[in-house]
Image (cartoon, rainbow, N blue to C red; front, side):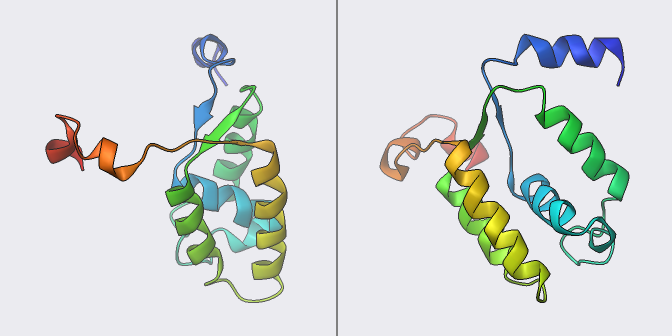
Length: 120
């Protein structure tokens, strides 16, 4: 990883990083079976080296942030895996959630934001 990237990641180390659905799914699938990454419909755009880079990047941050919506989507996508990878991925998800920060804003509040109509 380049020095610039390391410096940039270091700048946000203590603030944490939010991980969205497809990247989080890559983490779970790769943690269970790297060979499955390119063979699973939902992660086929990634390579095992992308998983390795993701793990390296996430290691820079003092906290990982997720939302209930992201976790729900990831859970649904993991359930599309066949056994034993499905169960192993769900075990990894259950363990990881206890270590991460879960953040959410109520929908009734978010929809009142000015930029909601632009970004949803």
